[in-house]
Length: 139
Image 1: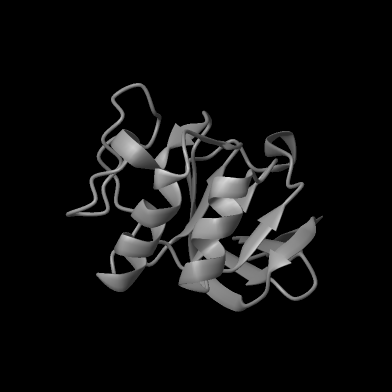
Image 2 (image 1 turned 60 degrees about the horizontal axis):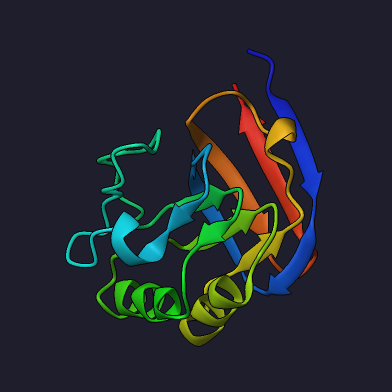
């Protein structure tokens, strides 16, 4: 079986490393109202990941939507062990940076959605938040 690796280079904003499952939101998402703070599930019915949990995953979204309250949603998810282990995006806004910084969640931006596989779930992904590198491993 041949293993295919996709290496993406972005900009490291919050350092840290994590390996695990990557889930890919195809649309921007609001952390306030788009994610259930009690379960970590995506509750925005227009999102392709509707009903999926962020918990323990690497989460990609093009960008976030919303106010500064979203940073506290990220922090609450982190404190309750319901949040993602790393976040990747095309463009990080102040809310997303703040939420990841206070929660110590690795954050890499400048990852273009068009460079990602067309799947919503990637089983094997490595995040190197120190270098801003993402490695997707496809079997």
